[in-house]
Image (cartoon, rainbow, N blue to C red; front, side, top):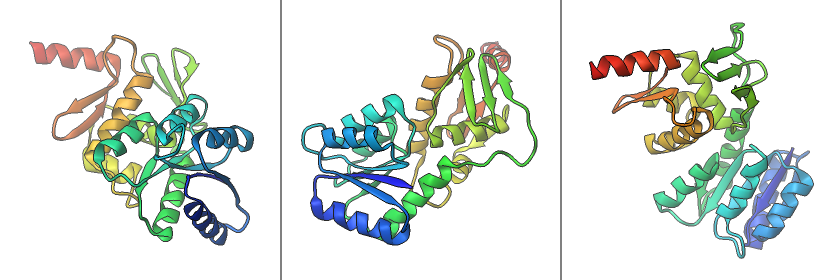
Length: 240
C-alpha cells in the first residue's frame, strides 16, 4: 500500500510516516512538503491514500485536492488546523473523503485511514442482483461501475456507497441517520450537513441536465431514490 503525505511541517510528516510504517510494515510512504511537490508525487507514485494538509505554501490543500479529483477517486483525508465548519465543508465539496483537525492522535488518524480504505473496498451485495437501471442511469453492483447515458461516471468511494444504499432501497425514504450509519459507520463524526454535501456531489454527477433529480429530499427525514417516472407522478400528485 502506498500512502502520500503532503504537509509543510517536517515533524508532522515524519511522525505520520513512522506511525504508518509501524501499522503497515509493507507500506510505502511518500512525503511532500508543498502543493506542487504533492501533485508531482501523486502522479509519479499513484498512491492508494492521500493525507493532505490544507495550509500548504504555494498551492494550498484545496487546490491540490481539485487537481487530484480531476483524474482520480483515490481516498483523500484532509489535515487541517482550522476548526471552522466552512473549511471542512469546502473540503468535502471538492471531493475529500474525510478530514482530521489538528492536533490529532496517531491512533485516531490510523483509524480514519482504515475507514476510508474499507469504504473504498465495498464488497458486492450478498444477493445476486443484475445491473440497476433507472432512466439514463445504470449501476453494476459487481464491478461498481456507474454509467449515465452510456458513459462511465467516476464516483469517490463515499459517493458510490451512498448511491448503492439509495438504489438498493429505491422508492423508500432512507433516514439521515440510516445513511450516516451505513456509509460512514462509527468511524467518523459525519453529520447531516456532511451528508447534504455528498448528496449534492452525487446529484451533480448523475442527474440529467435540467431534468428531475433521481434523489428526492424529504425535508427533516432523509432522501429517496426515485425513477424518472415515479418522480414525475409524485410531482403531479403534489401539484394536484
